[in-house]
Image (tube, rainbow, N blue to C red; front, side, top):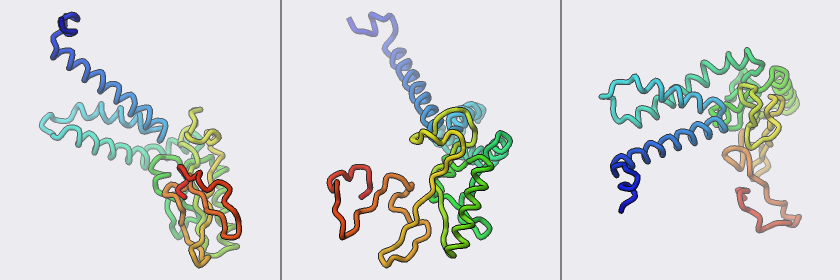
Length: 217
């Protein structure tokens, strides 16, 4: 006797239930991952799915429309909704892009896209002052930062960091030079600024020449 007959459910119904359970599992995983990475992404995804239900059925393909609508909702939330709410709760956004009136910028736009560019007002002021001091002493330099903190202080960790939850920690990017020892603004051996290590100088020994996994060497 087949399993579907023993359970008393038609095989088609069992298949539909399996698909439904899989969809719920994928949704839970997506919400958790988006929350871990961006803090607000999980909530935005749930709101997106709730709003898409009111779209006319003739709007197809449904999944593509949902994905596009999520991107729009996430961008609107990140640029319009979150900044004033974060400011009201004690977090301000650090400058994202290198502009003439800004002395500090994120190394990569991904930092701001993931809402990891927030800090307490005091920390933001200190970062801007430090950047201004660097530019005053080293004209032409372009200070960049990596991860700061999430927009809202909820007690959750901002992985992979263990100490960025209070909004008072900001990772400052190294300054790199080219082959001719000339300064290269915004240069980094890693596209995200992390997990990249420099090779030892020619006159020094490499203590771990084989340990290059996840180092981008």
